Amino acid sequence: METKIAADESGELSGLAWPFGTPDRVGDVIEKGAFSNVSLPLPMLFGHDMTDPVGAWAEAVEKEDGLHVKGSLLVNDLPRAREVHALIKAGAVRGLSIGFSPKKAAPRRGGGRTIKALELVEISLVTVPMHPDARVASAKSAIAALRIAEAINRAAAQIGRN
Image (cartoon, rainbow, N blue to C red):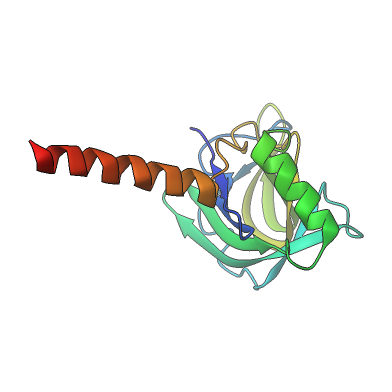
């Protein structure tokens, strides 16, 4: 499974914060339904540093494959958010990592826990996420989208001439 986070020029982000079905680096598995009581908005931090908020997550939805999130880096308001945005676009920051308190968990054979309920307190942008599948796969930009649209328009114009 590949986790994607995409960032556009306005700072809008979307991604998969936690994939279901596989353990993280310490063996924890979070089951579908564990995120049912998410309270929004959630802080968007850099590196789980409570003193380094860079935005807010406005949407968190459980789907079959995991917890999908959408939010915004405050690129128009915070210099640090602009720095983090640049790091995402450059590929230096490639992951999402959740900060939570377990409410219902059981030990797993071989280590880690199976977590059935939790309190999600933040989602961070990180260089190395705890879950190996929670990595940045792409960063979109408005300029790239415009270039693609221009290429499509040129191709359509060529087809129209033939």
